[in-house]
Length: 239
Image 1 (cartoon, one colour):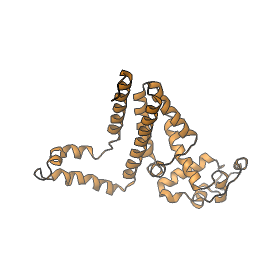
Image 2 (image 1 turned 30 degrees about the vertical axis):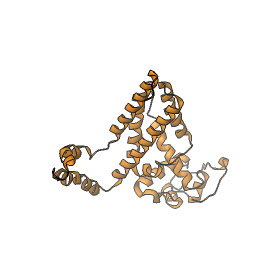
Image 3 (image 1 turned 180 degrees about the horizontal axis):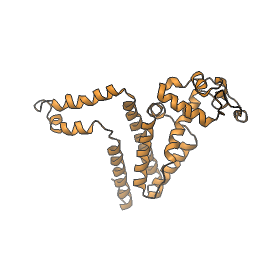
Image 4 (image 1 turned 60 degrees about the vertical axis):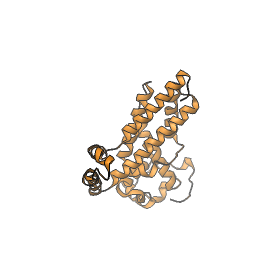
């Protein structure tokens, strides 16, 4: 897509496309998400999207100015899908743990889209809702504003980074994933103790652990550190 702006009032198309559907921003985003998972970033072309929608490619400009505009909408939709099933309970640590795990699962459900969008800032409704919600959880827990922002930043970046990292692994062909898992079993598990004593001592744990994501453990470490920080603040110490 190119830089071509259509006034908002003129964006809605009411006539059905060739496939009998009425275009909407939501339909275009859903279709783009499906195509990205099938074809990667190459799916974000007006020609391919128009063909999938049974619509004239130029009609997409009624909803999105260019492909980056669409990419931001996709990123915001992924955030929205996570928020729709997250309900804070008042237990800040449990609430953030649940949200982090849902963010990670959402990335793995759309791995190629997650890799393309994890680093983007959308400034759109769902992202704004997420920022407001997470900072609200932290402020209500008793974190001072600077600490709330610091922990928010670390929490979100950690979730997005692990989502992108693990999505990249998920997007690999199955044979490649299996070959990498075998490296831990066939190489690391057989390194001699006289040359690699620490690997040899922990080999069985490495083989068992390295096949799965470390995000749950990393998330727990972050939340434990945040709890410790909050305890220090409540006690009037700074450590």
